[in-house]
Length: 397
Image 1: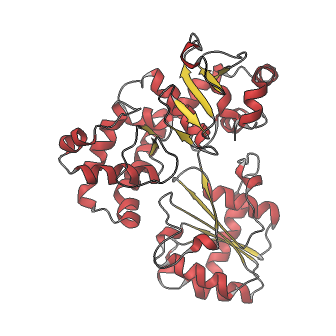
Image 2 (image 1 turned 90 degrees about the horizontal axis):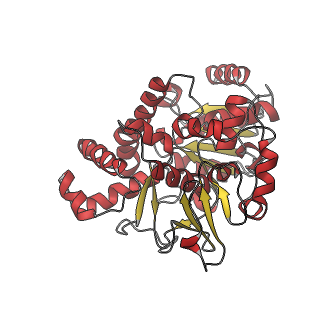
Image 3 (image 1 turned 60 degrees about the vertical axis):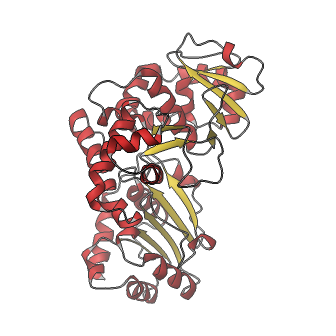
């Protein structure tokens, strides 16, 4: 216990507060049980430590622990919590819960046993909150944490502070917002950099090292997290990587599942399972006709990589511009909105808004006559009427 307390204090002391994710102010930290899922490297640990430092300082009423710590190879989480509460602990922050066997059972028991204890836990995007043994979904409020938005990237790397906007506000007042933003920054100067290496907050100036780390993240998902959390056989990791590469080459990929199965020498059912697993892991973003009723046997209409940085990390050549645009749009809006396939344009958002994505010369002819229809156009600083700069969709969170 004392070693964990020392580790906690060291981490709190080292945690910077100069940049905070927008999610920090949005989470209901006062609730009894909050879960945060997300890909490795998006900043879940930093988020916890920043909140503790801001709310509790060095008070041991709150403590951060990571369940991949060797302490928990010999001690149970339940025993630790009993000691923590006995010492006056009130708020427990648990990182990497998926590294601990039967984590959901113990957290459920702790939740029931200590009604005054508040718990926040983080884990892989593949974390199952609802399963046959323990249903934490009735107890936990669970949130997904994405990488940096374009807005957050500007603040993190360049100290340029632009307020976030809602989608409705953006659609209504995008010209005014773009002109006000232009007084602080020329967004097109930084947009290409964001698409290449702005999504994860660990870029330090070396493209080579950044992309190598992204490849390590993908390898860890395929080789460690999928076997651990989806029971995939480690021997088929090479087939999953092969499929990932094939789909990346033509993202957005319009899947011919039978042809893909033949190419990687497996069954159609297995390919569909892999696709949905990688979607759960925040490696893919799949676009379906219906935003509800996800099934492992349901073929997506299109498959995108989850973010544009993955495109640069995986592909040996520069990604196609149109693919980058659509991938960016789906990623940024997918944080808070439902995107589905449209047979008249590129995307339907929240079953209400239709969007066509293109370059600066893209006109509105394709969406003429459609209600609530817009063009998201790249390479323009500001738009007018229903033509909106693509970069502005990076201001939503």
